[in-house]
Image 1 (cartoon, one colour):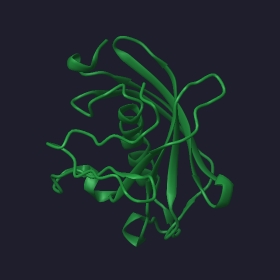
Image 2 (spheres, one colour):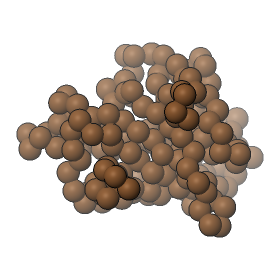
Image 3 (cartoon, helix red, strand yellow):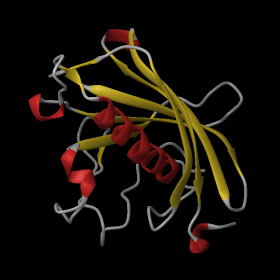
Length: 165
């Protein structure tokens, strides 16, 4: 785990920079990859939970291309944000090098439609980390004080061999 200060992901894969407002950009260098569809993304550490477990916030800015026919954020876009957020958060926590780790499972409950043209945040907390696995959970939220809850989720990442402790 790190001290909560944003640290850039590996430069060979990401165009990352610490921004003036405390956010770290989290964008792939290779714009032909799937992640580019939901970029630009930013990540920042949040205050840890009372028991010391880390929390990170990952933000995207949904626009019309992310909408469904009901003019809400398409569910597949929300799922993509959640999946990418698992890795961005785990890297922020110092658990991954954003390499070739994989999502083992992802459970999601959709609660409300996401709003277009308003920041969409995945707030991710680490539940537990083992030698090979990272267990995470969180919510996708919008609005002041995160009052508009879009989805809740839990997921498990299997670490790449070089990230295992």
